[in-house]
Structure formats: structure tokens, C-alpha cells
Length: 234
Image (cartoon, rainbow, N blue to C red; front, side, top):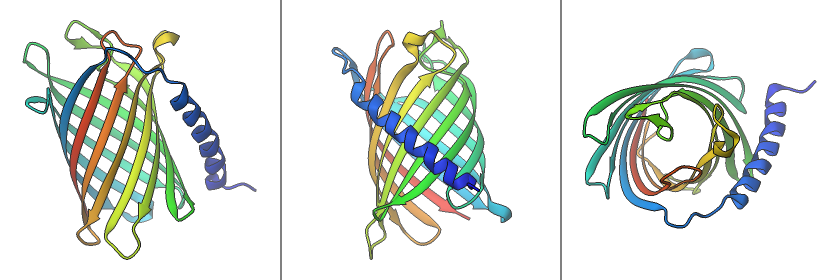
């Protein structure tokens, strides 16, 4: 009898193959707008009994060469570890964002995740499949954003430097709009690499570089992002 972990690993392999094909087929756009941004992140985690975990994340973003306030994000989530291979998560995000008229607006979003992980050649490979519903920065009516159903797939590879407190990681993530015309189905890719340093068993610092590409939109943006993060486990 196949376990849920075994089934998830097989699904993850097929999803990984499709994601790699998608990456190689994506067009490179000419005349993209470009921006350098900085993001600051505080991540708190609390492990409960029975495989449950609660988390809270506070994030602050700056755009226009990091000189202008963009948004503040607060995310609350709960996850459940089915086994050592598969996690499920549900979460809610609230956002305070500056609109083009320099007025603050509040927006909301919910998400459901399934994450499978597997060890490969001394590295940790994971695939997260997310479905989220709520605000969207791509489609809007005036300054009032429309709610959309979006699928995000993130592939992550981590490697621990033996005998040190450092972890290296890299990610590839794709955005797919599910309630729009087919030509707008895929509209964003995010590539990143980073370094984590563990202060102790409960806290760590993170530095991450992100390259984010938009396409199939009227004014595609290419963002270069430097993220600084701190995580604390309780």
C-alpha cells in the first residue's frame, strides 16, 4: 500500500519536470521596467503537539530603488505535518499598500499549501503547491484591485555546509492566474538564492537575492530584490 508521502514524492517529481520545462519556454521581454527593492522580514514559529505549527510573519517592502514605501504585510498561518515528507498549511494575509495617489489601502488574501520534501545527494529538495484567493497586483479596476484565484508552485533546494551554521538555498517559483483568459494564465516568475546563519537552535538570520519577472501584462516589471530576514522558533 502506498503511503501519502510516497504518492506526494511521485507527484512532486512530475511537477518538478513540468516546472523546469516551463522555465526554459518562458519568453524574455524587451523593454521591461526595472526596479531595485529591499524587503525586511520577521518570521515567528511556534511548534505545537501532534505535528501542528503556528507562524506569524511581518514584512516591510520598499520600491523605486528602495527609496519609497511600498507595503506592509502580515501573514498568519497554521501547518500540519502528515509525515516527514508532506506538510499542509492554511493561512491569511493582510496588506497595507500605497496606491498611485499615495493613499494607503488595505487588502486581504487566504492561501492553502501542500509541501512535499525529499533528500537528494545530501541536499533537501521541496516542492510547495499553493492556491491563494484575494488581492492581486496584476488585474485591477481603477485603484480597486480585483480578487483572483492564483496557483503558485515553488521549487526549493537547500544545502547545509557541514560543520558550520550556514545553509545555502535557491528557489524557483511560478504564478498562474486561474480565473482569467488563457493568455494570462502565467504572469510571473521568481528566482532567488540566499544564505541562512543559525545563531542557535531557535533563531537564524537570512540574506536573500530575488529576481522577479512579470510577463503577459501591460507594463511588465523586472524587480531585483535584496531581502533581510530574521526567524525565531518558540
